[in-house]
Image (cartoon, rainbow, N blue to C red; front, side, top):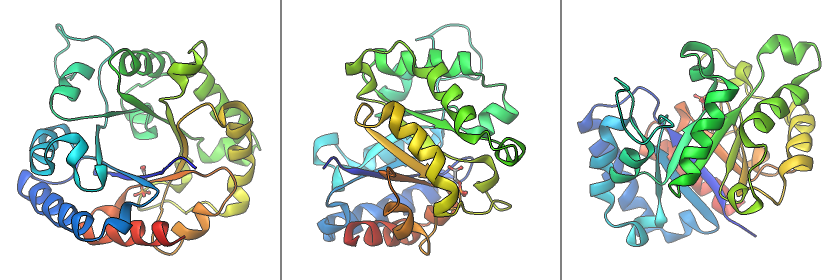
Length: 256
Ligand code: PGA
């Protein structure tokens, strides 16, 4: 069995000193308790400002506690140039990233991310040997119309069509229904996940590295989510914004 990818994005949170404290605490837990990452690929997606610091604290990649991987929350598709405010995939890799998160619903909703730009970013990540972590997910009204599976397949196909099997094998897809994300979100029930994950599995199962679920994941629902058909990993927000919270979910996942 391939590893379960279980990680967290800190979104636009944490000063450098918060990041240092979190990383030291997590690194210590993973070193002292190797069972926490047994069968699991843990990952952190800090804000870009903290990435190099987190990378330095954790040390060289193959020797990292729990072989923890790092990511960025977004990157431009060009390698460099006059793109004020953006960072490129080579810059992200240089600062310690292995993963490029692409198309989170907050970026689609508030920063004009489109299917076209997610595709360009997936291609850029692959070109540089990073793992693209493509997020897909429908708004409430699409769910209400019973069109969730069609909607997310359109997002995933738009970003991934035409990739070779070898390229696809590095891709991570996170299904994150918009109505399940954040402080006002309601965690998806196992029944609500069945159709979207079935659709993603039919199309991409066994071909991509991992299918993950995200949206109000917490210590109460992590085990049942991981026991749900075709869910191979978890992408966590708020519940993993303390090292203890994240460790607790790793503990549940490694025991599951
Ligand atoms: P949440 O965030 O766990 O805080 O709902 C999930 C996400 O946006 O990936």
